[in-house]
Image (cartoon, rainbow, N blue to C red):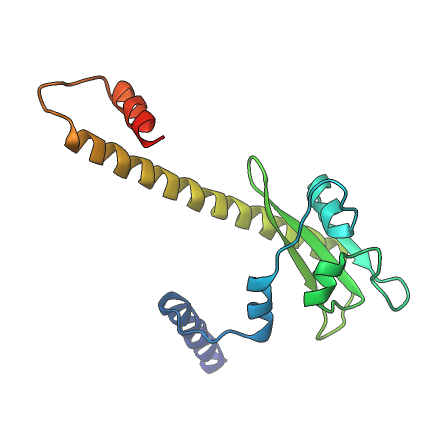
Length: 173
């Protein structure tokens, strides 16, 4: 048992190392995901848009042999989902950042309400991490701009930091 755990730990370590150094090989699905983009504005009435607009997870079952009318043609062009899917919007503090669509294509197990709730918990956590990453990047950029602006100012003309930041923002615009 210990050997199995060590092997799995080593495999996870290897995966993380490959992710960090960019040497992880792309799968066809990952390549497809990178190409995919979907309009979710007004006038869109598929299940993914519904989950995004309602900001709630959704379990969706295929009717008959087709997803037509329930999932957008854009989505179906890239993916061939299993007969049951779960949709979880990535909801940050202020907006929807994206969506996770999952199925059990390989084992065909039913997706339960509990599975949907677990995915929604993961999606909320992921959205907060993504938003925090965006905010951190914006903060770092603002700090770099303010530092560059302060370095370019004559030392004999000190101002309140808020005034300096407003002037820096005005110069950048």
